[in-house]
Length: 221
Ligand code: SAM
Image (cartoon, rainbow, N blue to C red; front, side, top):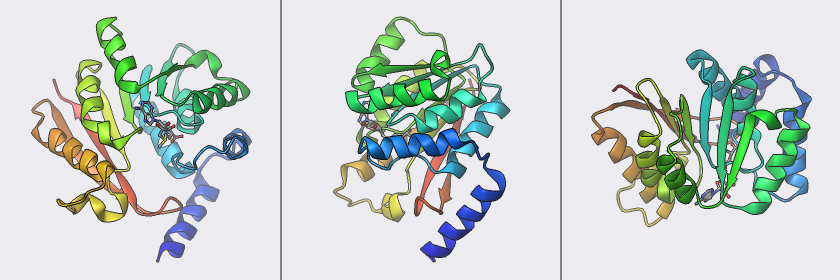
């Protein structure tokens, strides 16, 4: 079944996902620098792009940059005065991402903050940073609840919050999992469920990246 899911994903990618060679170039560059292949898929990247467009987002916060593949999808969705701020712990990942975003001609729209995301978020909250229209949580899943706490402080009514990789091949439903990422995601889902100002759902996904999924929430007030 996995092969079929991947083949169908490939079909839709070929038909519907913009064939801008820069996206492939970025993935090749990431591989050249031996970054882990943990970028969102092309269909998922296009989905994030569409969400940002539908929202009319001007300010986007991404937690977890890697080589900047999803950052580029967000940057492409922004008008000339839009901004994506992306947080990355690993210096090498951040350097490759900067190189990629410059190559794509969107360096002026993207700021990468290097360091532990929780430190960058704390600074952003105390600055204080203006609210973001869309927040994408895609870093170390163990800290998802911490990131959600900060995301809520950096949001305003109408902000969209997305949490990636929440299904983890179905492991999310195991309450006895010893995997810190599963524990982190389950705690995050509990927090989404308990948060009175958020309306949320989760969508399972299959395709070239296997069986996973994301949560999507809107800040109501
Ligand atoms: N959003 C990227 C994309 O789709 O192209 C993929 C991000 S990848 C799944 C997760 C990234 O989060 C990695 O580059 C990793 O180094 C980074 N990361 C892990 N722990 C972090 C932390 N505590 N603070 C900031 N970034 C972290």
